[in-house]
Amino acid sequence: MFQPFRSLQQVCGWDCAINLSKPKQLKKSDVLTKADYIKILQRNVNTIVREIDKDFNCISCGQKRDKYHAGHYYHAGGHSWLRFNLLNIWKQCDYCNTHLSGNIAHYHKSLENLNVIDRLERELTIHRNLKLSIEDLKDALANIKHAKREWKRVYKSKITNDERIGVRIWFNQLIGIYK
Image (cartoon, helix red, strand yellow):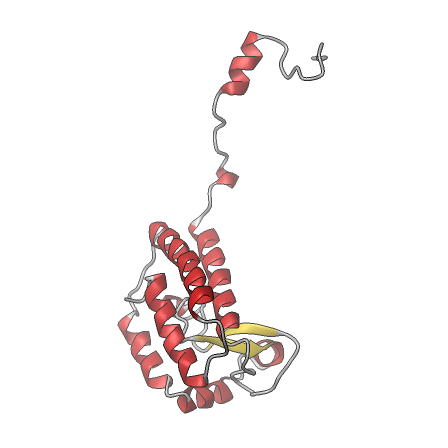
């Protein structure tokens, strides 16, 4: 058992010092998987959605609530190619998203009123074969950090209902997944 002779002593001899100075091998748990990158990117996209829609009520019921989610119109499980598309994700109250399974009928009506539904359906077919690699996800993460800084620099006041559609399109372009 090694007992340090001095308070700053970390090793018992030369062999231990050499071993301590070698770069450590990454463990499998230290390497991020594609699923990890998807979760991180989704969390960042959801943050952007909440920021864009912070001055608006729930997209489905139109009410002001205490807790909000970033609710997908086309669910990420069945439409994975649209999971990061901001035209597909809007601020939705916890009740509509969780207890009413998205409250899709009212969600659809709100998107129709915003004239987004046709554009979203085009996005659905255009990007149907979209497959993202880990490199694509890493690039999107780097782009989203830049996009967040741009958002804070450009948008300092409330946005209108029409502007939030343009902002979503702008973010989609900056993130770089939906070209």
